[in-house]
Image (cartoon, rainbow, N blue to C red):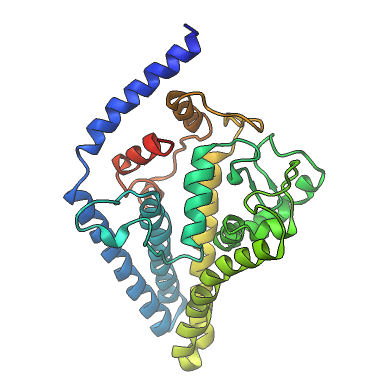
Length: 316
């Protein structure tokens, strides 16, 4: 038997056993956990918005911005990301966090994200022409994206524009709106749209706008308008909390998926077994350490056991 084939078979069997042990532990405690986390997040939102509105000096104002950022970061990275992965699907009492119906407090279309991330990204991790996460706009994240001198010139744009607007950029990407204007440098040219027909463009715009419009009207019109003469202050506080969430999210995602030791795969690559697919997941991502405070706003608050069943069975 091919040593590689045997290696992947053993890896698959070991992960199957791990899945059984982990799945047996998922239940009421996990639903109670996410419920408490969601409640805590809402408290941070109330405190943050109140402090931004009532602040009379910069110190209190920035504490309010920080509290509102924590709310948005938890809703996006901890609660929303996990819910859309299906972490609480099928658990009694966790219906509010079911992946098919969950709506997060973030400007990203849930249905589009589930397809682009769960099916395309995890289904074909770092495979050119299949994984849309290989490219975000002008960013060249792997060697599978054909090089252009534009990629060097685009670095300041990535730092000053893409990162501060990371979530709306993700929304335009996963809905296929990016495909209308920019090709991915590969023969197929498109990441997510089937073509550039009027219907495809209309559907992409509709999916993008159904999150953009209500979200940004809430953040930049509704809450500021309620502040009356303090409109500018609430608008500024909401904008700063958005920028902080976007930059933090961009940094953590890029650190986990970009680097010299991250594997990428040419177009047409397919795993021959679940064990090989799991190995591709590992090779296409990396662990990294951050300071203690940041560990509890990204990646430590949601137990890892909630991810494992999804990661092991996404192709099954």
